[in-house]
Length: 199
Length: 199
Image 1 (cartoon, rainbow over the protein chains, first blue to last red):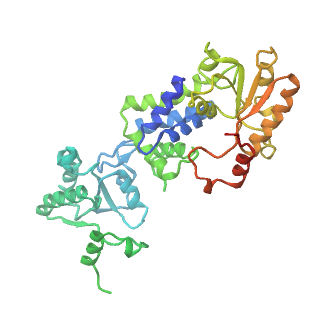
Image 2 (image 1 turned 120 degrees about the vertical axis):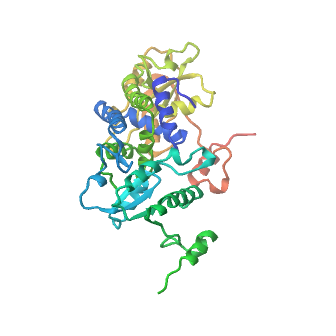
């Protein structure tokens, strides 16, 4: 239903525009805002503007950054000979959570998808190639999503990089740790068989 | 996980403070904001401030209003002899959706709940009594929630109003339309039996 109060309805509409937020949730969120104190509401509105104006793309890896460089490109303790290529800034966060990877990243901001009119020029492949010209990078790990688009993007980039003498690797496919074999899909299971290792 | 970027983390925290919004959803919402254009982000931030500063309480019924009076109190075509008492502005919206009720409302903004230190003075009961002094109102329908608190509030108010010669009624209890008797709880079912009507 719609409210007769324009400012309230407008706010509900704003929340509802977000992916995964239905009408009821948007309504609850708008009422949450009405219940805030003046200063809290101002902080909330400022947080939106702040995030929007202050967060830019890192000039090197295209990850999110609040300055010219992102915290990872700025850090001294990262291995500059490896670059992990991901589709999205959230993927960087996911890999960082493992605390296993010490190299650099490159964020493509998408994957090649002819269906959606996204070709190699629409994602940050040129920027990746530019980073490889100085010869410091020895390996590029393709960590694009295990989807058709992510796969195609990984293949495309690996074909560009191999002639440059750079090792290109891909994340392993297999059954997720803790999952039940019974519920693994056939493709994943056959990839897990292909990729089996000796004990 | 937390991001190293303060403006982003701050925005995620703001979203996460809302009831029913978990960390993953808050993160997705923050990334949605980053993906907005400059003007869209500004509209979003303004919608929050607008809703917060422009929406006040109606001076008569305590419902939400963007001026001194809410649209229902301002309307000429409502039956001014009946007041429906609800706990929350959302309840007004719910009853309006039925298109059945043509009277006025009174929003208590809560219910009496000694457990949460909410007594009769913390909700808008005084304002309701004040509206009844001119003798124009003939019936007050208690539409507080069918909970212990809502029930206690309805009882409390009805005892105040009956000596004033005003008819006080309560929403009917019963099985919800479309529900399955098998799954109705015992209390609801016994109330439905008590309130049975002749065919």
